[in-house]
Image (cartoon, rainbow, N blue to C red; front, side, top):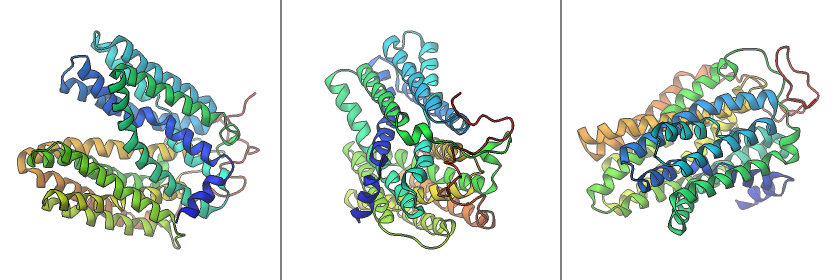
Length: 419
C-alpha cells in the first residue's frame, strides 16, 4: 500500500511541492481556531470571534476562484507568492493592532482571506507535469487528500502549542510566516516557475461555463454541508454526555476514518469512468452518515464517526479527477479553486443549519442534517449523470496541454510569460 505513495514521493520535485503546499496552507487550515483564540484573549465575545472567523471564511471563498483564474492567466509565481505575503500582512495587522479598532480588525481578516493563495489548486495543476502518468497523478490526488487530513489534524494542535508557549498573537504571526515560506518554497521550484496554463477561450464565466463542473460543484456543496453540520452536532453530543473531551474523540475518529479511506483508495488502480466511481463513493458516504442519527453511547458513536469519515477522502480524491476532466481548457487552477470554495461555503451552510436543527429537535436532528446533505449530494450526481458522462476535455496528462510552454495564448489573454 505504501509503495505507491513512495513511488510518487521519489519523483523529482514531488516531495518538495507537497510539503511546501501543506506548510503554505497552514494559515488557511488553522485560521478559524487562531482567530477565535486571539479574539477571546483580547477580551472579545464568542459572537465577535465567530463573526471574524466567518468574515475570513467568506473572504477566502471570494478570493480563491479569482486568484485561481489569475494563476491560469499569469502563472504561479506572479500570483501565489504576492498573495501569500498580502494575506500574512492582513493577519499580522490583526495580531499587532488587536481589537482596538473593530473596523480595522474586520478589514485585516478580510484582506487575509481574500489573498489566501490558491496553493491547493496550484498543486493539482502541477501533478501532471511532475508525475507524467495518469495513474500516478490519480494516486497523487489520493495522497493529497490524505495529507490534507493530516494537516487539519496537526495544524490546530500546532496553534494551541504556540498559544501555550507564547500568545495567540504570536501564534498568528508564526503560522502566517510559515505560510509565506511554504508558498515561497513552492513557487521557486522548477515545475511552478515553468508551468503555463493551456490557451483558453475568452469567456467571462471562465471555468464555470462547464456544465459538468457545475454539476460537481452542486454535489460537493452538499458534501461540505454534511461535514459542517457534523462539527456542530458533535458539540451538542458532547454536551449531552457532559464531557468536552468527547467532541475531540469524535473529530479525531472522523479524521482517522478519512485517513484510512484515503490511503486505501490510493493504494490501488481503478478502472472505469471516475464519474461513475464518484457516484458509488458518495452513495457509500451518505450511507455512513445516516447511522450518526442513532447517537448511541460514546464508544459506539466514536466508531460510527470513524465510519462516517472513511469515504470522505476517496470522494475528494475522485472529485479532483472529475474536475480535471471537465474544466475548460486553460482553467484548471480556477476550477480546482471553485471546488475548494464550494466545499467551504457548503461547510459554512452546514454549521448554520445544524445549530437551529439541534435547538429544535435535539442532537439527532443535527446529525440528520449530515445525512440529508449526503443524500442530496448523491441525488445531484444521479440527476446530472448525463452531463457528467461527457468530459469537457481529456485528462491533463497530455503532452502540450496544460503544461505546454510553447502554446500561444488566445487573443485577449496573457500567456503568463515573463518579458
